[in-house]
Length: 138
Image (tube, rainbow, N blue to C red; front, side, top):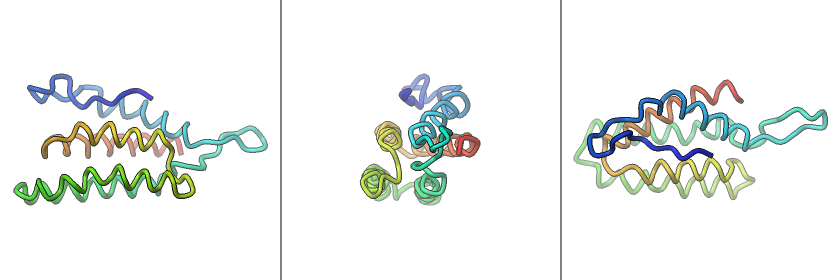
């Protein structure tokens, strides 16, 4: 899977111009493929990374982002919950393989880039774009 990089210039906070389009679409394709297994007829069937499962993670990111936007002083209390997304994904991966290693890696890559509220906002927007593209691959 391609590495997701939020910023074209991190110091100037210039967002990668293709993050919400090409990058999100490619990642959605990769995550969908990683959750597919072939049926007896040889057609791919999505067994893992189902949209409802990924939506739980997306909803959590949106909730945390909203919390920070409404109360920026709460950042230090929210950051541990952002990092906990990785543990939740690992749990979902271990529990009946609801999500794939690739999805866990995606969250690890993105969460590692979140240092402040604007980074969380970029991630929330990327995740929204990802979910929009993912819908077509389900």
